Picture 1 (cartoon, rainbow, N blue to C red):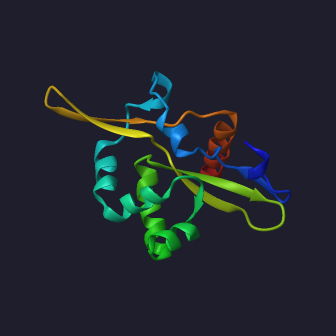
Picture 2 (cartoon, one colour):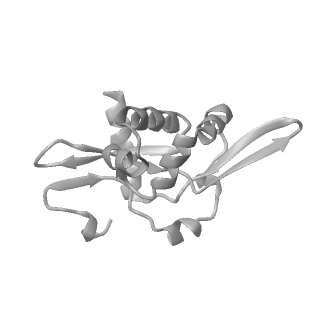
Length: 149
């Protein structure tokens, strides 16, 4: 994580921002391709126009409030669509811990490519994930701890 992302009153538990050229250069390996994605959940999310709009705006960690403004949607709609995208494992949720105020929940697109395959008459979906570093893994750990509590 670079210094420009860290403010003195915030401890970011978010993934390292990636620019579009970095994301485009990610190549799938066994460790960053999810073969166990839920086909109906992924297809249902991608079929939903509002989910696609949110995915197109999520180019880095973004709050729900920022999504409401960028997408022109009500907050209840944004939260409902984020939940749907999270269940499909297309969006990651992170917490930014702040020293001087409430923590912030941020969201980020969690794929670089989605592929639909047909083999022996059966459909399957595979999702290529962005590479993760130690900061990303720690952010995922904290997010999972939040869900359990």
